[in-house]
Length: 536
Figure 1 (cartoon, helix red, strand yellow):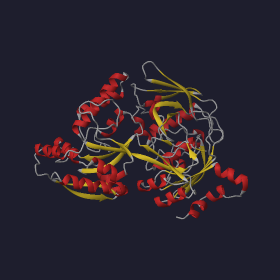
Figure 2 (cartoon, one colour):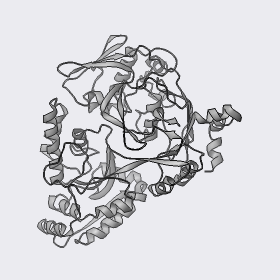
Figure 3 (tube, one colour):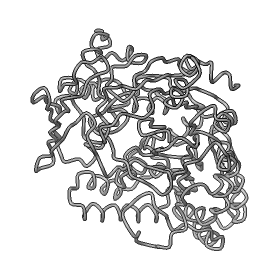
Figure 4 (tube, one colour):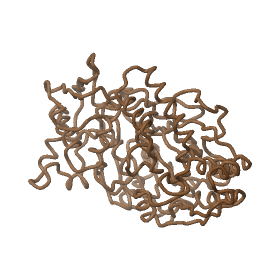
């Protein structure tokens, strides 16, 4: 992939070539060139199989009723703020005294990309689709008690209500996520059929949106070109995005993407190799905005339903034998936030999660625990990781093997194809492995509900705890903040004592961009949000 490919690829040349002089310079300044190693495989982010890049595109093209706020971090960085929810297509909202009815008033000035007004009928149809159609939206919405179409009622052309059976603290937050797109129902219905009443096939390659950008061209695996929606009203400030055009180009090789940024031939990349970041930080033309992934974590998991990891003392022994600092340095070059080495022992200092857990390297303790577990001479096991994460997982695996050998545990390293790994992980068939996880809704109860309860895909350790099940259920519907915080602290205590998996760190989200680009925001879906970017 050469420089000319980026400039000539799929309408890119037509947008940024086209003459010299002042007009060209102005056009270039108002055009953002974004390079990614992956592909946007669908324009409907709710469809099964949608890539993370498709999620990112939808946030820039579609509006939702609500959006998370944005908060300033040290340096040039910004982050989404899950504790602040603002209207996007919603002008305002109110919640009933019993916390079971959300009344949403729509903006009167919002229009779809075709110029027609956004109405409560469109919102009702969109929400009905999300809980009815076979899509990724339905299971996500269940986490906020949004289950069936009759929960959404039209009051008048600008007002709609959402009714819950119980107060659910994630109901409103679920209306902010990638899947909660609001759809121009009149346009979509024109392409619906008896077999496809929700126009799912048509929406894979077409949009019916109102968001900040309009899709001008889309070639999966090559490029997508966006132009600014000059009538967009969904920003928190009321302003339009700075960039009038966005050129998204797929460039598979990470070194090529890094070179394009360093030479000034591209403006932004977010999926470069961690090993390239230190060099780019010294570049004259590029800058790096590094933000720990506050809603994610890297972990080493032990299957609690498979011997010998069904013994809590074995899990605790492994946790005490891991070489945390060496892994942190070798795996992600110390670029992230540690989730180990906490000073507390029994009770966490607060109810936030993920937070630092009191795991430390202590081989003497590890040997003692292993003997108490009935394995004074250790045992043999496998340690697996996915080939797609080999760049970071291979050095980790080597260090795990070396350190566990010191307490008698013999480790066979297994690098598995992505599909095989994902299937084995989903079926809880691996005894010992590493992976990463991200929660779109980064609230303590939700982490534990998602990753540590029920026999389901995301319960990596297949952990069974009746008390954890009780605590997460109580927290979900708890309206008293003090009681909620107390319950969350107990969840952290239970998790730490049982050690179903070992929290390692939150790796940095490294966004590499031209020095002239500012305003980058880390979003919960870990993709670029073009709406807040500007050239300075």
